[in-house]
Image: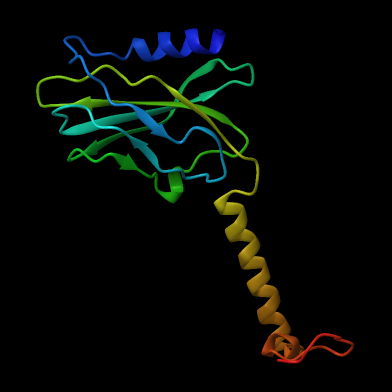
Length: 163
């Protein structure tokens, strides 16, 4: 219950003066996701020509931190957005996000916040680093002349079928 009160209070403070009545509905992500760079999607707000999206982290007890981790304006009435690789979210963290529609004159209220968690696992940077290590190892093996297993031939003692 505390999480909801804090989130509604925090996002409620972002509502523009003179806001339009209808707001977009946050669709995804929600619950637990695997991707560190999720695609955020929402339902349309009437007459919106752009959308503001904001993502907050949640503390382990479910309350929001004061730091916004993502904030973006999506032009042209788009109904989804995916952050670039350098703006991906941290694994093992809980987040809340909301979206609002904008016209030239006013903004809608913020959508109700949607909560989700990014599953723990290696980050994109960690995977790229591991891939570089594997590539360097394989390159070194080939240069040393021990790449016969990599050329599609089974090693001695292989009991499977030959290609």
